[in-house]
Image (tube, rainbow, N blue to C red):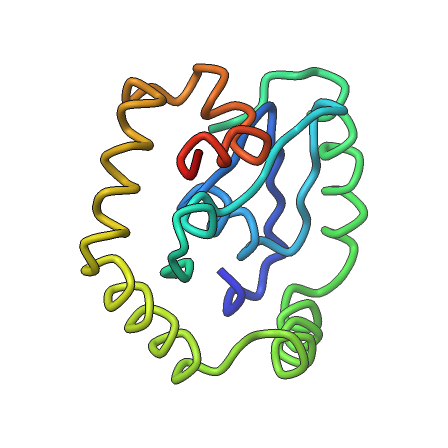
Length: 145
């Protein structure tokens, strides 16, 4: 996404965790549709290194639609060059990303991490809409009590 010349925009209506949050992070602009939007990496609560939907809210869709015509004023090539400069300063090196993925796999293969994952699935009943999942930051201690 960061290599596209076009500006990428995303809106979160409720919760973005794990791969959804990572996808969101890769965008140029991110908007929280609700005041209590939650984002995060559940791997951290399990002691793991992170490995690497469209909003229907009219207010934010309108806000995003207001930005798009302004962005279209600029030549896409110029936006691409600006994004390249930003990427040099802000994007991790590929070797760092590969290293993080290796550390994730190493940590996830440990028996304690696998037991925590099983416990988390039991606490959430493998659903992403329950209280434990929606309030994971506040609930993670349940895995260790």
